[in-house]
Amino acid sequence: MNMVTSLLNRALAFFCTSLSILLVACVVIQVFSRYVLNAPSTLTDEMARFLFIWVGLMGAAYALGQKRHLAIDLLIMKLENKPVQLKGLKLLISVISMVFAAIIMVYGGGSLMLKTLATGQVSPSLGIEMGLVYAAIPLSGCFMLIYLFEEFLQQLTSN
Image (cartoon, rainbow, N blue to C red):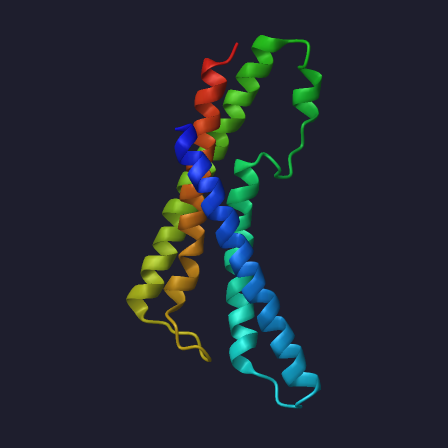
């Protein structure tokens, strides 16, 4: 499992970096065309929006895998001297997180993606199917589930 997450870490880091570079390029082109050429590009505007969605969701999965996501650790700090209760709390947090990722992101996001693909909705400027844009939700949820499942297994086997 550790090899899978190591490969996933490298792939997501490369993917997020690549998308960020494209996003910056789109924004620079958009600013140049709007303020220098006085002819704003609708293509780069829409592409930047879609890239931002993908960077945000894939970056969230990567941050979760690196344990750098936002967390409120008040209860964990209170239970530092009680290892059995702390382990139980961490397991509960992992289970709740996995349920959220599975139901909301994978199932709900997958349903949204499939319904949008079925309707054939396309973006106005780029002409790409909106279901492909929405695919970032269930894909990010799957990556999160991999990371969360590995963390859950580590917590079960730890002291």
